Image (cartoon, rainbow over all chains, first blue to last red; front, side):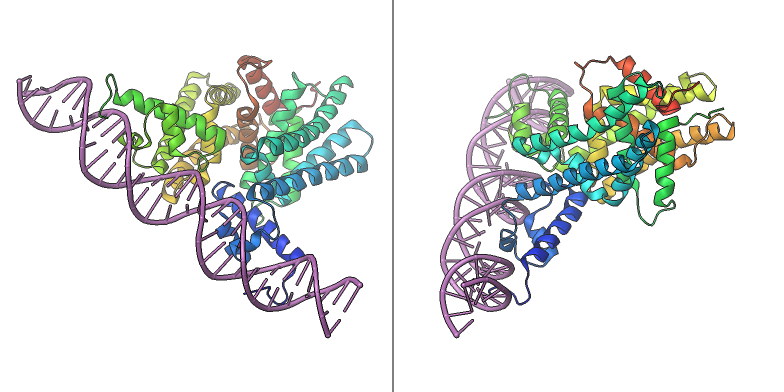
Amino acid sequence: MGRIAGSNGERTAALIRRAALRLIHRQGFAAMNLRELAAEVGISPASLYNHMRTKQNLLFDLVHEHMTTLLAETDAALAAAGPALMDRLRAFIGHHVLYHLERKREVYIANFELRALDPPNAAVILGLRHDYEARLIALLEEGVAAGLLAVEDVRVAAYAMLAMLTGVCTWYRPSGRLGRDDIVAVHIALALDGVCRRD
Amino acid sequence: MGRIAGSNGERTAALIRRAALRLIHRQGFAAMNLRELAAEVGISPASLYNHMRTKQNLLFDLVHEHMTTLLAETDAALAAAGPALMDRLRAFIGHHVLYHLERKREVYIANFELRALDPPNAAVILGLRHDYEARLIALLEEGVAAGLLAVEDVRVAAYAMLAMLTGVCTWYRPSGRLGRDDIVAVHIALALDGVCRRD
DNA sequence: TCGGAAAACGAACATATGTTCGTTTAGCAG
DNA sequence: CTGCTAAACGAACATATGTTCGTTTTCCGA
């Protein structure tokens, strides 16, 4: 059997990436085998190698694209927000939650399959993650300096906020009770004001 | 070669569990192979089966013991706190963070290796997790009813709080800059009051 | 139109991996 | 002391898995 009529490299590559995201998200990278991935795409295991170098490289590509997209979109959202610090902080939170609602598979994989990356690949991703965290840390520091925010430790606060905001990935279902805007609003309120009533 | 002088069933079983926690935490359950585990313990792969039924069962035992311990300790902490709602809420948060600092490997595994459990095993663990979440949801509902708390959605708020509080597992190092009590205090403040300054 | 690149396939390889089996030795109850 | 059980071992099995190879067929630029 040779090349199949109507086959198209770019389309097949996209199918592979989408199926890989599903499978890795459901079972984890180590538990996803390439025969299963190939079956999902509808090609033979050998054919996967027309579109990727190795299994490890496939994971790296998926995570790397996600991280660069996240960074670029975040900067765009910050630039689009008003100049006031609280507006930019709200923009950061809102964008983070929305992005994580829409691309929860990518986010989940990027967060929890870091250990499956080869050390050099992991270092690249950790660098990008560090850049992302730096955006929030800078906002918090600016807010504290301006007297708008009160946190005992900026770095820990940033990590805690990110953990909270990223948590939506683990339970969100598009068919759920709340709409996206509701979820965004709840998280902005929680991050800024906590659960206690303000009088 | 037969039984080794000084060998002891209970001690070996404990060594296996401890080594398994380390390896699963570092590499993930699917990526941990039993030859590596056996080498870490200092026995042969075949000998593992004197202390466990299957690899799957080992994971289930680890997660199950963690969840039942967490539930029992939480109830004890709540019972030991004062009767006022805010005292109990602070006790829940404080205990959660402390427990997660001290047993971050168990927590990480219980949260992120659920998908590696067989469906019947996973159902048991999900039930225990649901019980745990119910403790916090009940506290939040009581606080809202009493007018002490203000959250738009109790269930989402509980999930968000748990995600934030559990996040410490991903970055905490005992040798780090902050002591445990500092970290607990920061998280209680963040969960209750958020990052905004209160005047 | 025609030849090379692209994109698929079946088959196989080398290795990894969970598990079992038979055997052997140490500990301990009677 | 004796025999049963606990706890270890080496060896092997059956299967799974990432990857490569040679081949075949389609697409497309020259």
